[in-house]
Length: 374
Image (cartoon, rainbow, N blue to C red; front, side, top):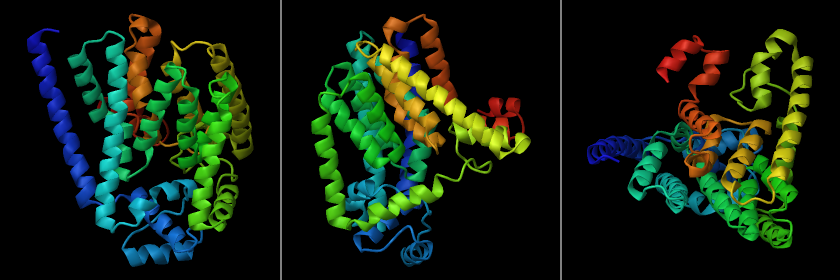
């Protein structure tokens, strides 16, 4: 790269990182991130033997802490992992959790950078590209401001892609387990990896770790939170399509596109058919690539995106899972000048502004104004 161009690139990246630092500071000190507050209240309630699934108990506990927790419940296995943060004072918990998320974002970017350099890309330009992309990638920014867990999931996904590329099935399986125990819909990742044979021989070790993790949560919180969580899933995920939801998975999109015009039964029928078709197609694609390590990063990204589309509930910030697979796949020299790399690059640019497009299609002032704004 021309030295003058590299200098300009460096200035742009430094400005983006400065803007990102302001966002981090605001989140850690000046605001009360709603999802982080929910994690905090739920974990403290479980620690004290209360039931966060009970709305009156939840609201009263949140009022005492000066927080407004949401009704949605994370798996007790995640609350067990979050417990060290929940036992801190609220201000300290905000700072610690925000810094943990940024450390995870750095870790995912570092893994992507190492893969890019290992494939022959320039070290400095690759570092600047990773830093600039991470600073503007909308799902990563949104999960930061909400206090969500998705940056940690992005680090686990990055490690899983790295392990898959090197044939380390135990590590890939453990990280896939972590994804599922933190966000339940990502448990489908284990199913896909079993199907492709990535962790079949290592399943015993992965299952043992999963049981130990679950046993730790039960030992600390008791068995009732597991029952309450299963009841929550039964009551809240079995209600069909919701046209007023912010859900951007397949059933959320169909609810907003079809249900107001055709009725619930037709929209749900189309959703069931397309869900089955996408699942079958995903299984087929992954099965066809099961013996190759060269496309492991592309496989990891495809797998996570399939789960995002098929899950009962998905939002934009969940796409922070994809930051490392996207960076590695779209800069793969083997794909250079190819249509696939062009599609990946376009997809990455769209994801930078993904918050605007669903609203433009279903609720916004129109596609063109939102496109120009993005």
